[in-house]
Figure (cartoon, helix red, strand yellow):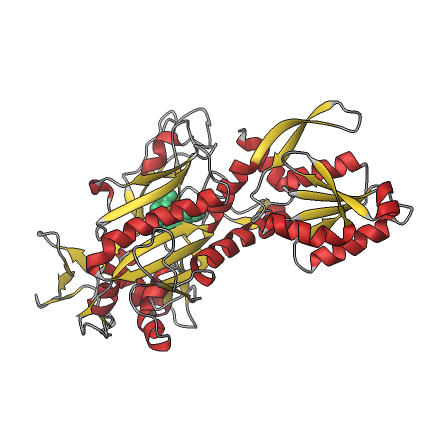
Length: 487
Ligand code: ATP
């Protein structure tokens, strides 16, 4: 698939716009247009419905090792700066960066091989005539900001680089305010911010994006089983919504790739068309985080010692006395099992997904070109976005064949009834073939046409976006017909 075609369709049809475009745009920031906002919202709602609200804690879901509960949270973007010190982001959330002394270009060291020089696009960074790249240095990806009128370190805070930490610091609040018992999960979706050095590949690497994260708390002895459950469950979620092809894969990390706290991580990846052949981009990471996060917020920032065990990172003060580098909250974040009496720090499985990357993958997967007959029966190339009906921005379009003979009135009546339940579109302008094409590009699964026959027998035509089949149903049954097909 040609990525340029998708990018231009996204702009033309209102899926995605460059942020602040009238001022030349801002690199790494994107706005969702009228169709895009519906698509992304449907993806987020499908996630919340399937993972949180629709989850039935009484039933052992297919493949789940046991019953579990799910609950949600919505935390602030700016949190106490100590959160990021204990989580490790303050010290470790860095990319290695180099600058070109001549053109002032800036790159991530690990992106150098696939980047171009902005001055001479045929060249790699640093290939100017007498050019030199600076030595690699650390660049922290957190966006700093100032809270209140305090200047300097005291007022310094950060926009969250992930939603996960809000869940950990509220672990006790959730336990105390609900009656959830381990194993249970807390879900959160919301904006995260990373000052990416080289934002690129459309929305894939943005500086402001949305995450959909779950922290699942379980007994340490069961954590591997739950890790495997979540890894497989999340993979199935993507396939159930239409990412069913060869382009999706699950990849277990090698031991040397694992984060400092993790004993297992898998990525759900998609072969985005802008990546070189054979390369995949991460949609979601499912990480086994052990007790790293809860213990860090309790005791202070943890590091692995020589034996590979986690312990509080210590530094020496001026008098040579050892003290924790970053002190934890000192709050008790352990869990007590009421039945066995055991007290422990739960282990955590974290399925961490990006709403924008998922949206981009669904856009790429949906894009198709095929041959369809026009009004004269001649085959024409048509662009069709084959979204799964659950995530399609519009579920149906209502089209009167002509703008007379009472057809618009009947069509508007159907449109209003549908609108109470679904995102639908009414269009009476232009040739019917052109109107179908516009809906194909928007990915609308069904078009409902009011035509001459409607006037005599009160039936309408329903056209299927993918098969192009048409059939008639009584106008009064249209809402049920669409509901059965899109929900
Ligand atoms: P990458 O290696 O691609 O930078 P990551 O491993 O740092 O990603 P995580 O910290 O695991 O990503 O974040 C979880 C999810 O959040 C990712 O799987 C991705 O979907 C999303 N995400 C992370 N960074 C970005 C970004 N800059 N733009 C859009 N989505 C992002």
